[in-house]
Image 1: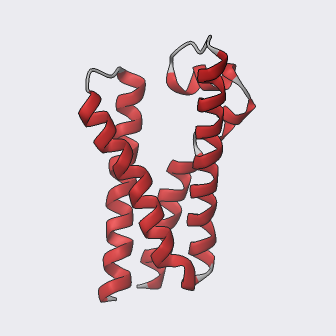
Image 2: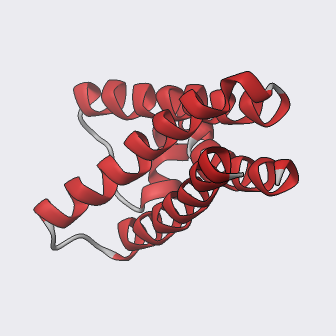
Image 3: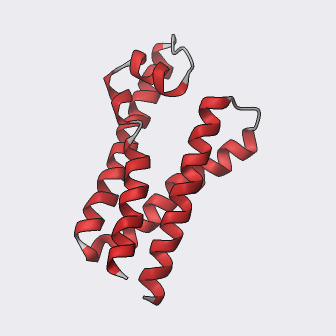
Length: 122
């Protein structure tokens, strides 16, 4: 059961770490999301978003190694991924790049639900 939990945590971690190169600037963010970022305020927010995803991904990786962190990591990852899905659903009308993020976050949520279930019932 522990191997299943580790695999699920790593899947969710990889999904959360994909946006981290956005920390490096607008060009990276524009490639990731397919939208121009001309406003300095938006650039600050999006680079910070990339940093936050790096932190969540790091927590998930650490929990794959340290079993005592797994419960917290599952909760943090679920809040992150499920929160994005709720926001995307409420806003709607997003483009193909965001649709790919939605699909990735569905995968992350499924992986984290499996990990959480394995932690509880395993």
